[in-house]
Image 1 (tube, helix red, strand yellow):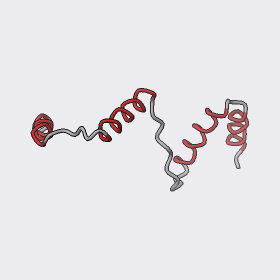
Image 2: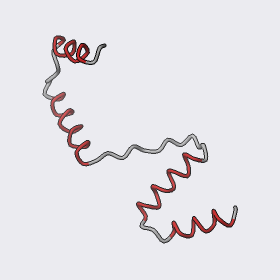
Image 3: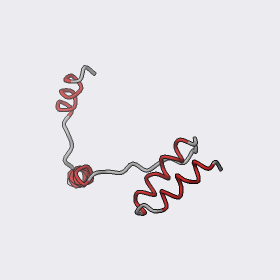
Image 4: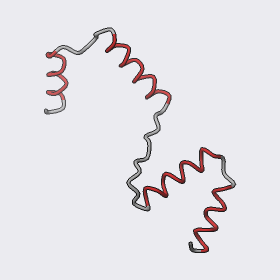
Amino acid sequence: MTKLLDEALEAVRRLPSDDQDDIARAIIQLAGSDLAAPILLSPEEREAIARSKAAAARGEFATEEQVRAVWAKHGL
C-alpha cells in the first residue's frame, strides 16, 4: 500500500460509518470489483415505490391505451 493511500484510509477512519461505507463502495468500484454497489434511494423514491406496490396489489394497472399514449409521447 502506498503512503498516500494509507493516509487517505486513516482520514476515512475518522469519518462517520455511513460516510466510510460510501467511500468504501466508491473504492470497490474504482478497483474494478465485481461487487455491485447498492443503489441508495431517497425518501421520495421509497414512497413512490411503496405507492406503486400498493396500487399493483389493488390491481390498478394502466390500460393498453394509456401505455400506448406514453410510448407515443416518447416516440416509441
